[in-house]
Image 1 (tube, rainbow, N blue to C red):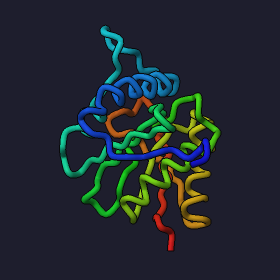
Image 2: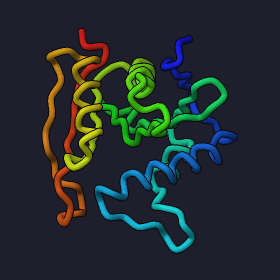
Image 3: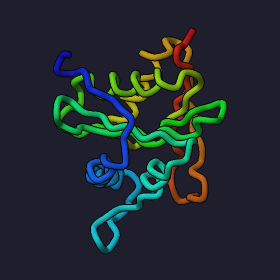
Image 4: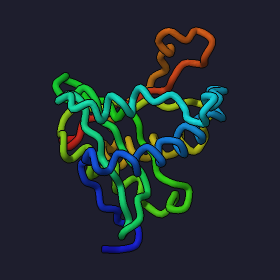
Length: 169
């Protein structure tokens, strides 16, 4: 295993405390783009975290590690729908730009072949570059991008959605 190759595995209830700590870092990173502030207890909204660990067959949480170090997570939703959604994806800053994120996305989507979508914010330049690269790497020349309003949040800029099929065949 090279230094950039992560281990991706389904997150178990025993992993939840680790994923919760990673979730705080994720939400902190995103707060820059939506202006969300922590709750009075220092946590952030966690509906997606709750859903991912709900035991619903329509969600799948994954823990991303490099060696013994947890370095990220991925939450997949809509597993029973025609289009799966990479609902939340996070890699800690200490391993960004080392290939960890791309390798992790590839592993997660390979576990659920078919149509995929992922949303991100246009203001997040790193996410824009990353998700466009994911589209091109996983579905060369066969991915698309569109802007969609954020449901129930007319005050926010539209999300950018990347769509692709994996494997791209």
